[in-house]
Length: 197
Image (spheres, rainbow, N blue to C red):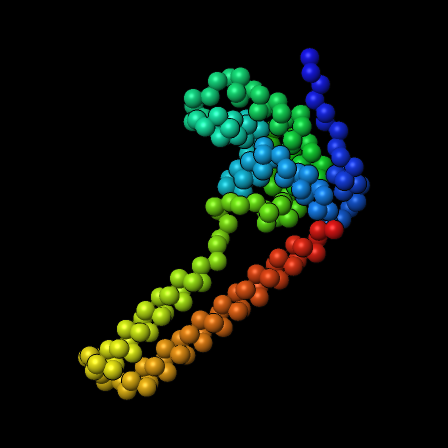
């Protein structure tokens, strides 16, 4: 019978001794270097709620075997279940990334999970798509100025210079919104980074 090393690296055990919300980069990368732990985070992020060990193990086994949950064999389920139960979930719980009730088999993300999420490439994270807003405003602005220049009704009622000024003001407003959103995003990232040693 093979023994599974369930001991924690010194970096992780030192985190659990501190009552701080801080994690070192070594701990973060230690946790993220394993694909199953990344899949645990991805699944919990998508679930946005407490999940059972059984459903988590089934989904990860399905991802690993590139199949549907209903098509899994009992061996495929068991292999992932045991590894999660004995190794991965306890390590993640000890590092303060998840809340793991081993007796009840319940898992949820903890407050420190956001420190790891920014290193994951997940489809659920909102992407910065300001380029689309600028492109849309450019197309609308060119169309409006062209319509005013060609005196197309009802735009012909407004002087071309006024239409051009409105387009410039719209770009100014969009730029201010972009700066404001980026500033808030940077504050959020800086807040997370300040919790990393």
